[in-house]
Length: 343
Ligand SMILES: Cc1ncc(COP(=O)(O)O)c(C=O)c1O
Image (cartoon, rainbow, N blue to C red; front, side, top):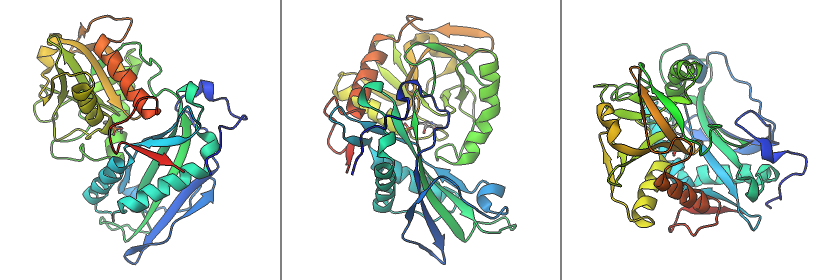
């Protein structure tokens, strides 16, 4: 049964800093099959130090959110897409897959058990849900493990970028986050460890985050460390990069549909050349954590190019934000199949 938000937690002041929930989900893979999977109290596991997940980064994860509707119920936004992407990520690092049905069952069980941590509708905070898989067992040999752990853990969260809907500046990184034909198009831990250092450089220079160029030619915008990139051109076209080294964002794919069907915009997935960004009227990053984070300016090799108003999100970015968040929180009717009600 879904519980109403706990009165013990201050849901109005959340960031992405840890707030523990009561239960997590664990399932183990051994001798070629998964066990039943169970909920367990707390968030601790014990594994071998020579686990491939620790030593070689044999690991994959997903990032999703559970939203409290006005009527008190809770829902997921396109969770089957996360389940499919998780399968792709697991295959890429040679881990066994989890069926879509089991993935959905595991995230729903975990949310129901922790439902008092799904923040109230009006706070616009959410319960972040993190399914993950790691190679376990003692494996010094540089090869895929024979044993795995699939887990789901949750945490109530507020804004990922504290700038919210106020535009802020991003820095084009001198580093690559993922190689061309590497692992950029799947959600595996190594991509994120690689982005800590460039992110730190950007932050220490006063930027919200960095953006990466395509690793092959370094001429086109790829994406951010934890979010895709989109922009609105001066003639009103929604453009977003098409690249083999970016994560196929579910938020981005949804925005392509929303821009087309709700706002009647032309939408194009194309190359966005860094030396032509002054043709853009609005720019933003998007993702489950970032939602839509407007970009006020992009700095590349010492030159800052700014977009539209610097103190508020551009008009189309704002409309996209309201539609996306309205659908996610159940205030606006979603396209068929986008919402999973948790019971
Ligand atoms: C590197 C990267 N790009 C893009 C995204 C956005 O993807 P999604 O919209 O599916 O959350 C994420 C977040 O998961 C990410 O980590």
